[in-house]
Amino acid sequence: MTNLFASISCRAQIKPAAIRTSVPSAFLLSMLLMLFSVPETNAAEPEQIQGFHTEEESRRINPVIRISADGRKMVYVVRERNFDTSLEGWLNPLKEDWSVNDASRVYLYDLGTGERTLLYTGQFSTASVNNATVLQSLEGGFSLDINRDGSRVALAYTSTSMNQARDRLSNTLKIAVINTATLSVSDIVSVSLPGYSATAVPLKMSTDGSRAVFAFEPAMETTATVYGVEWQEASNKPKLVSVKLQPGSQPIELSDPDWGETGSETSLIGSIGSAYTGFFDISANGNQVVLHNTGTGILYAVPADGGTLRVLAELPPGRSGYVAISGDGARVAFADRTDFTETVLYQIPYAGGERVEITRSNTYFAGNLKLNANGSHLLYQDTLADPGGSFGYPGTSRIVSIDGNTSVSVGKDIADASENLNMVITTVSGWQGELSVFKAAVTQFNPDIPDDIYIGAFNGTKPDPSLSIPLNNIGVIRTQNWRIYSCIRVLQNGEPAMYEGMDRLDLTLEITSMDAGAVRVLAARQFNANGEHNADGVLPDCSGSFDLATNQYVDIIKLDNETYQTMFELINGDTLELVLRSAELM
Image (cartoon, rainbow, N blue to C red; front, side, top):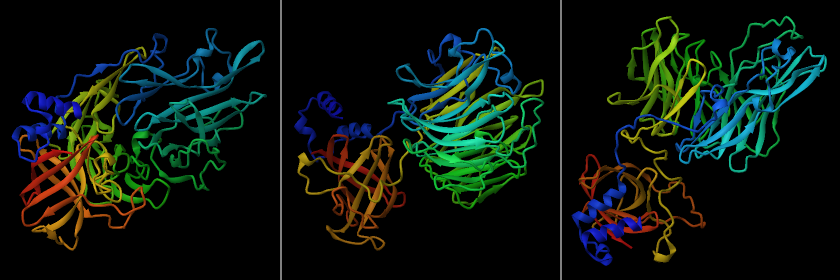
């Protein structure tokens, strides 16, 4: 921020030394508060993403596209071509124009630079039978997800092979993780499937990249031969399984297709009505899962490492199924399609409680839900019924605030969105299979960027040693969300005092008015209640103070590479609103 302060000095025609003063200045406060503000703009018109595929791939793009939580990168699948993956297709010769380029491919696309990187190519092999080339093995049915900064991609796919007698197919479901910097691939899970399935397995990864959840129907079985195949009705609903993503470790072998036994790294956490990604979700830290069993209509919460299913809400069976959890794991949104003309969107605390209506959609259904980091805004997609009676045409996507008072249209079919819904990826499919992909920057809501209310066990950061500040912990402004994280010592006329039995408090503040120079106490708690030590192995200091007699909050606060001595004054004891009175660059 040094350049900005130099600009302030230039425009004010004063020497830099004059900025380093504790004398209140309306000009200085106005400019300093500009540092705290997040610009508000209208939602941009959706912009078509060019160059993310080549012309020959245009009809092979899977519309299930995932975007990193920071909104910078997206990952997608180019599906296989010229391979007939039906059961009968494995016995027929390959098409004459097949080539090695017909395999599935996974790409990473940088939304800023427009560059794409090939992450993975689906493996396949052929055999010669009666002077004809036939398919021998194939990796297909890819589904994927990407972590917060795009450094890790999780894959779920099926590896299928035909035996030498060409009378039986064997299938293995694999979960793998790709390091997008080194392009290294680590197998995490290998599951032998009892039958043949060419469909993709739904997969979701926590935004921190620590855990993934996936679902499939383990009870699907076929007869011993691919000739005259008969499908048996599944006796169990799709199983939802959670795995820790630990690249480099030995892959977990799951030999029991019915998940009767679960290992320490893999847990069966419930069942859902149908194997669809939108019917379950995982929190950003990978600890919490929500799932909607459409067969029973029950919405559950459960720890991601397995445990007791806890009922959040009960709906009539077969209605909707869409569910989402906020990044912080505190709030859950779900859809209830009351009939074919209306869907009600609700939110409920993950801890349990009363459901609260967010909004109503007078469409065939509203789904593809996604909550932002703190659950303040919900992205959803409306879908109308077309004149022929099917659904999926036309539709629109909206972001609505949880209080239901404001909304904005952001495109058509939702592919994915960043963690704070400020970047949304939408898709439009053509009649001949072409896929157009658009990005829309949605900033007018300015929902909070992911962050905890507090920083770890105690608020604050280590000061710049060059300033010789006699403290090991000072306040900090996080530029991701422009909140102030610090702690205060309670004073009374300059002497140590207590507030509700505490002499020191963690304090988190948010900007409420740029024009008025006002901040508000967002949260407060006992400072370092568990007696944690800092990175240097000593107890942390508390840099701020609040005097109950003068209503003044004084603190040392770090912003990027600069540190300020600040003074705020409490102006409203009911709303805990303060105003910045002075700021001195140290």
